[in-house]
Length: 395
Ligand SMILES: [Zn+2]
Image 1 (cartoon, helix red, strand yellow):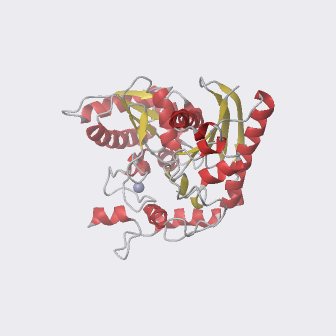
Image 2 (cartoon, protein in one colour; image 1 turned 45 degrees about the horizontal axis):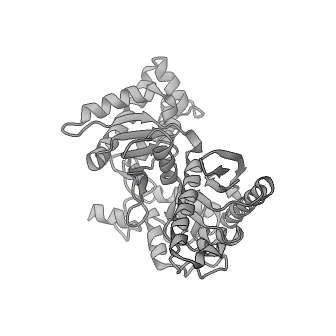
Image 3 (cartoon, protein in one colour; image 1 turned 60 degrees about the vertical axis):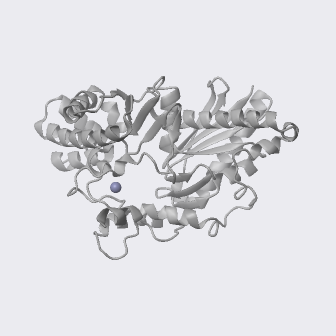
């Protein structure tokens, strides 16, 4: 049976599936990401996982996967197939598409950003099904977004469209890892609610789900924490809907698991804030934590469809399976086969990573973590801010 490999790489776990042409999940499996072993081991883990999936498919279905889709966190150049930066995995400028294609015998490989890939699945298969314009916002450790337009996700000119988590909603609010203050994700992510509720309840182990339960039982301190988060969230979402005018607003991630405890006050808070804007339908995500994996499968099948289209135009393409491996490849990345050295791969890529506020390449998970925690510790010093976005705003 013709199938593709779908792989969603998270900070702690990887979810993978073999997906049939009709979207059926033929085989599902999970593995630890193993980020404690360092970025090179993580990359090797991804390649090995994909190779095992291909071997499994070949044995069970008579032929290996015809394509692969892989979703990764951080900053992703999907066009060139490069994982530019991921703070939680500690990698930079990894030519993942090329490495995967080499490991998988030249099949076409699509690389996508985790949230945009999840949004693609929510838009085509989940809560946004049938909506021509939607915004998908998962509320997890951080907050990101995927802008859906006519069945595709808008990546932006530099691959960072949809970063609603870094819209400033409280200019005097808490410091954010990006260098700003009062970003939406410092106030309304599951992690932010966990922090606020742990402090307010005096229980350092209490989390956002506990806060939601306390809200349901009428605890006034929990209600205050929850209202503050919902209010910040509504402010951020109204900014987004003013700009994008989506038909459907899909809210996912850990915080959305609170159900009506979140959605009832959130809808009211958004409604109270809009004036002329049309209210979108605000709905919970439907696919849960499988969205990224399902979206990776869609990316892979889209690539197969595009390859089939190109093959019709090219008589040569019909004979060589490898030819379809080059679909969508810029050539710049296609010619460099060897692994590892990515230092001189692209100065664009190096510049793009500055968005994350880091100034040099680190190759270990520990140092990446210290980068994350050191960023907020650096106050708004006027000297040489590493983040070009911060410069623009403060200028
Ligand atoms: Zn931020």
